[in-house]
Picture (tube, rainbow, N blue to C red):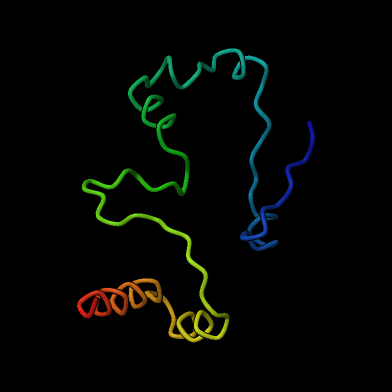
Length: 98
């Protein structure tokens, strides 16, 4: 059996400490697919992938692509998380004067 590659987010010591014995032929033969043993879980697993967001309950924003000067973008990104929301607020205030 081929050795598994260590994922980058797991420390080498933790990876080495795992002692998982190989499965016997009898154990492998007795295994059943997830969709047979837990069909509702299998259905849920096929709808969303790991790390994928679920659908918005009430989509309120629309993704757009705009071109802005590099220095402007850098200044907003430098303010940390939420920089897109801050740009949105500035645009909202600007629409009042249109």
